[in-house]
Amino acid sequence: MNSVKHTPIANEVINELIEKACFNEQGLIPAIAQQHDSGEVLMMAWMNAQSIRESLLSGRVCYFSRSRKALWKKGETSGQVQNLISMRLDCDRDCLLVLVDQSGVACHTGRRNCFFHEVTPDGLIINSEVEVDPHRLYKNK
Image (cartoon, rainbow, N blue to C red; front, top):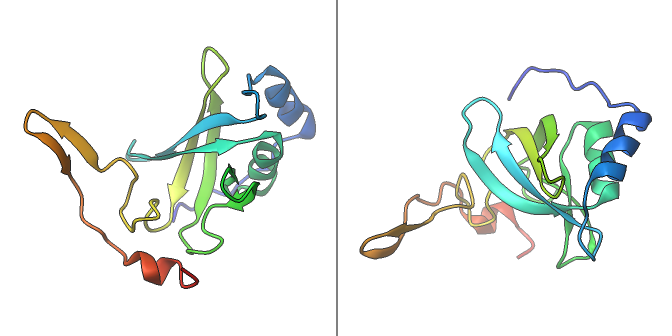
């Protein structure tokens, strides 16, 4: 885990980000999670204004789960936490880049990242192995 101590972001700054962000019709914005030190792209999830605020205040990344229709703190059931290092809004203001320090695997399949289906000239291949049995991550499934 990274030893960088999180500094909560002021409400005025959070409000400015939320005001400038272009959310979709459901009030959501895509967020790409990237490991801050290696540059590895870990996953994509959705955030709403409340999850952005929670992430920036607490330092622990929080998303909006479309299936649960609720806030979802990464790692709340699996223990695979994402600590927030930095959050960036893209040039069109319709996508976030969330730089994180990922504890363990990021993908619910037990892989380090969610981007393991690779397109090759011979077809789709799976380019990474399962590191943690998903049943161990999600004991209730």
